[in-house]
Length: 77
Length: 264
Image 1 (cartoon, one colour):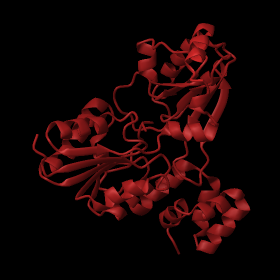
Image 2: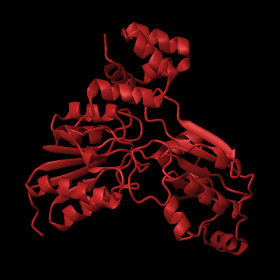
Image 3: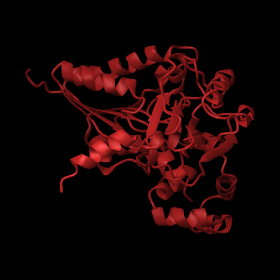
């Protein structure tokens, strides 16, 4: 079973899967089920709450690269 | 000047996690001796560490209440240290490293001034995301971009018949840093809206835009008039897009002068 971050990392790099995922909730659910994502994470992605998803990434990966926490950044770039 | 051993590559991750980084930038991260990064989400941070296990975050330099300019100078020091030790360093920022990117520009300038090979590589900025998502073409009527605080305090001269993009509208007049996702100064945003009403009508529609940081999430696009935008709870990373007013008529004299220059 992939973690949320593993699933999302793969999803972010697959334009076809993304297209399918964004078609509808049903299509997204079907994709997540096929990938073997947990029920909890399926619901989380369907709720589409960025902060909730971000917090789950932090819980799974920890703030990578030695950071104490991932802080909001300014809209540069 | 003699070329020294250390090198500096400055790249950006784009706005959306993982999906917007160029192949060239990925390769630079993978091959670097040292990678120092500022990511705007934990997925990208984790991915950068997978690309290069020597990658280290610079986020510990931010802290609540600390002047951002101090943080930026500390980032530059931390990036330059391994360059001076002879390492090939990759400095990664979110977005485009050169757009609202003082520490990235300054690191390149400093490295070059000390005789090191340094180069910045382009990436996708939040403005690029805005062009794509809101259907804005800067070639149509031009486009002016300002940092919101600078726009106000210097009373920047701008053309309301051309598109206007204001960045950092959620952090107006704040020099420090606050660990919160909602706007750091809503009252400052109110001052900006009042200022804009003086140049447009108060029923002029504007858009508060926040590009999605995840490819599967939707961006936040809030359309309101300048008057009703006062009631919106802004995020700290919002950008304000102000569409142009009526079109500016062409200048007859210049049109005629240019017409006379066209080769027959």
